[in-house]
Length: 252
Length: 150
Ligand code: SF4
Ligand code: FES
Image 1 (cartoon, rainbow over the protein chains, first blue to last red):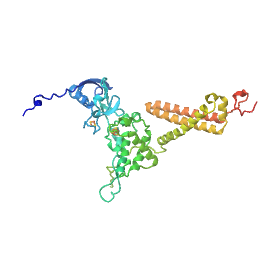
Image 2 (cartoon, each protein chain N blue to C red):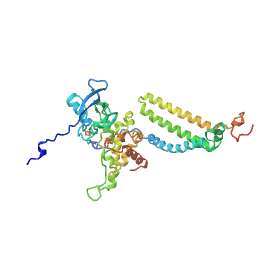
Image 3 (tube, rainbow over the protein chains, first blue to last red):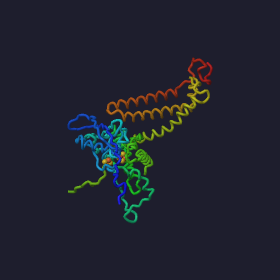
Image 4 (tube, chains in turn blue, brown):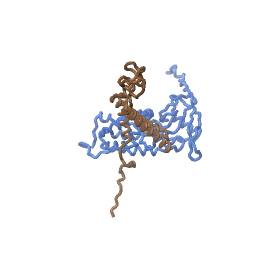
């Protein structure tokens, strides 16, 4: 039983590819004194992201290009970089969403020590993160059993800030952090917020005291760069404002 | 021999110097507080000077002298002067923190801002409280109405 369409093979519609120019800020600490810009042309499809372009360059054109990535799906937070002047995750930025009539500029995030090409030293960032005690502290036994029960509303209170993937896009977009590396930075405050407003946690007072430092929340001047940069859509500036309010009230 | 080991999980402590007055916090609160008060003071000032009565045409020495003769307006203007200058000075200080990267330039800018704020506050306060609305030997049509005819 042969049918008419059996001998008419389905020709898949050809997907158009296009050429994009990427201008990448390169730095090799072994030979360069100063970072410099280098451009690459890559053939891309509309479904490709900046990360795919970087892969193509690394695999096909220049194996020395260095950048961090792991999950490639916006979960691990390793590939925050400055793309056309905005902090984004390379794995979440579709090339076709950028203006491809012009070259796409890619550079490392600012404010942290540059190590190589798109890689920065994240240690100062994680040090501030550790400083706010980002873990649950409780000195009391859970009521009646093993679980610490929370109502939906109590969980909702800090839901936004649980989404952080520690990519540093916010902290490295903050003009205060650029000139004052001692500032805790938005990401540390976001992660403190996540525990300060958690009803199961009992160490809010200590965290509020840590952030009441002269390099703490008061350095923030509501520029909103962090909220704009966050690839997880966290309302970072609002979280910082809530921590400020909590410090003034003296409790979460 | 008693040996004490630090608890391996002892919380990390950011080296904090002496914890005196938290100036950053009070600065932040001051900016919010003075901002709200200044909105009232400045718009009240503009309204009274520019919109009530003959409006901007009424402004002359007599008008200002008449206002500064009343304690209400003296305190209004002094409050505006102090709040606005400290508010502006503190704002400039944060801008310097943002843009001046060298220690020395930072120091110079901040001291210059402080000097400007202090000088203007002292001068302004002095003028408001020692102002003579009826300087002797001036033509009467320039003076406020309450000046005794010379
Ligand atoms: S708050 Fe957003 S931008 Fe900042 S580190 Fe977390 S995920 Fe990244
Ligand atoms: S590679 Fe994991 S977030 Fe982009």
